[in-house]
Length: 293
Image 1 (cartoon, one colour):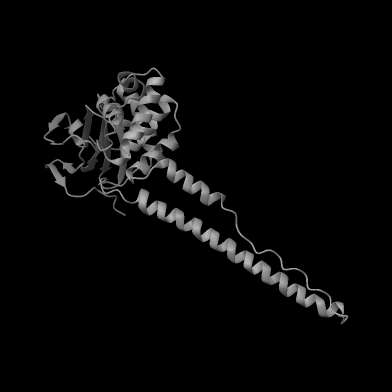
Image 2 (cartoon, helix red, strand yellow; image 1 turned 180 degrees about the vertical axis):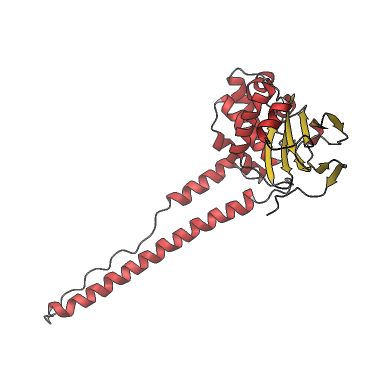
C-alpha cells in the first residue's frame, strides 16, 4: 500500500523538476529520510515525524497536504484510499427515505363538522413528524459512529510513539522556527538570560546539539516545559536551578553539554530516550517526564 503513495510522490517530484538533494534543501528534511519516503519505507521514525515530513514534502511539490495524510493513514490500515473515498461519498450521498403521504380518505356520506376533523388531521401530521425525526436521528447516529470508529482504528492504533504526540501543525511550526537556529546558532548567554532573568550564578545550563533532525522535550525544575524540533547542525540551551528532565526523539543525533562540559549520553538513531540530569550526573528514565500538578 505504501508503494503506491511513494510512487505518486516521486512522480510529482520528478514532474516538478526536483531531485532529492533539491528537496532536502527546500524542506530542510534529512536526505536519508527523503530517500526512505522515495522507496516507500515509512517506518524510519515515529508516525508523528512521518506525517510532519509528508506535509512538508507535499507542500514543496504542489500536492494537497490533507489528501496525502489521508492516503498515508489508509495505506497504514491496508485500505485502498480511492475505494475508501468512494464508500464515504456514497454514504454521504445516499438520500434519506421518507414514507409517501397516504392518500386522503374519500369523503363519506356523513357530514362531519370542523371540530371533528381537526383533531384527526393534527394527530396524522404529528405521527409523520415523529417518523421523520426518528429517521434523522438514526442518520445522525450513523455519522457519529463513523467518526468514532475512524478515530479508534486510524488515529488511536499506533504503538510506536512512546511520548505524547504534539499536533502536526505545531511540529511544522516548531521546525520552521528552528531553521533560524540552524542559520544563526543560539548564543548560550543570551538564551539563558532571556529565559531565566532571576537565576543565580549557581544555575545549570544544558546545551543540546543536533547532527540530525531531532525532537527535544525538556522539563525545567519540574515546573516549566520547553519543546523544540532541532534541525541538523543546530543547538539550543536551557537553564534551570536544580535539574532537567527530558525526552529526546531520534536520540542518536544528539549530544549534551552541561555548564560547558560534555555529558556522557548514549542514544540510537530513530529511538527515543528519557533522562534526568542534575549536578550529580545523568540518570536514564523508563518513562517520559510529566509536569507535576
